[in-house]
Length: 304
Length: 267
Image (cartoon, rainbow over all chains, first blue to last red):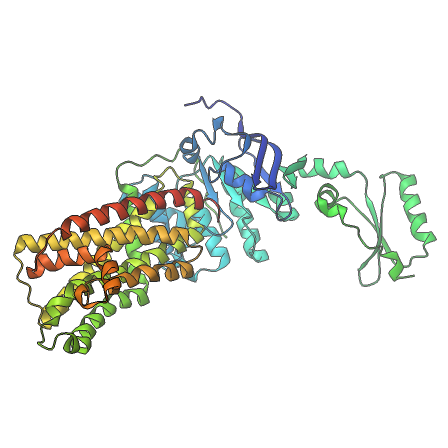
């Protein structure tokens, strides 16, 4: 049993996974610090779920080292399983059972006595706002309720690391914001959170640090501000009276740069409302991932 | 969400001991069976209807003396056990598609415990259905001449057959991509009792079919149950029956464990 003295919750070095000839992860490096909320951001097919599957012992890497609290994941999966919970992409709940039955089952499987399991189930139903639905079959729950139950199941024993694979995919805006609040409160109590998402806003809202994943590699890592700073200056936007974007010109943030940008717009004879925009995570994302390699159509021709 | 109470500090999830996990999963599977209304209805109704059909519709033509019920009961028991066990394939295939299996696999549990739950639940379900079959049979004129030990032996043989075929169906459920697929593959197994001594003596079949019927696993199992309940000669049937069950059980168990390790991670 290796000593657990590391400050890093997760340490991944040179992780490689291929399914046949298709390389999914190509030398992935990641370090997640204890207690932080870490977001793995990437487009569909970039390897997010594969990374989670390996970290949570569901599948094995082809090469590279994967450690959770200093424990070698492929070598000692059971020690890892004692410290983690996974809320996967498809809600990991039993549709045929009721909310209470789901929680009691998980509590029994986590070593609680029948009595303790019931008490814990009631606590969690209360905390995740599911008391009214406790006796209903999960099959009848709404998307938001399923996710809340899913999270509640992950907290039957409060894990040291919570893995969330696209936690808010398919939820409406209201449910998404509610879930963000829940995740923040869980993180505040000391659980390290590792989440994957396709939504930049989600990473921006929740994460202390963000890694941008593209084609099986980390192409950018840092806080949201650090990533935005990498893009450099502001963008001058020209919009028509309906607010539709006509043209955007990036600047280096200096006075002369701004003047230059305005000159470019002037020369093109553009009419409309000008505004200045700070770089968003979208800009970071697009500039770092393969999306930037697809050419964008020039907007100017439409108005001239 | 209003006034969220503070979460508790992280703790280690204990490894659980003994057969706690297995008993939790048996309970889960039984709850599933009880709430699956259509399957439950089929599990009770089908044996009863088959029993009545074979006795009153076909029975008169096969054995005009009216004692066909005494011949056919072991066959109906085995046929029904097959139908009942086949739902295990559907349940297992459904589980493998659901996200909950990933939750179980990221907990410090024996991986096979989920399967054990399904298998034991099927055993309980089908022994209950068998009791119904025997009850109906007794009501419509089934007159076995077995003593207590022979009844116990027959019950043991039936339980072993249910266990064997359930494990086979569980493995099929793992191998199939979907519950619908699992259902289709299982059909072939359900056909076997018709090609045995279940409903007519093997000697009445064409020669080439006799060879198949005499050498397939269902015939010695039925002959063992029939011998114990009705006093027909047992011969070496019990040994063949036990041998077949042992071989199939070993195969299904090994195949199932291999499939479970391989498939559960890659949905």
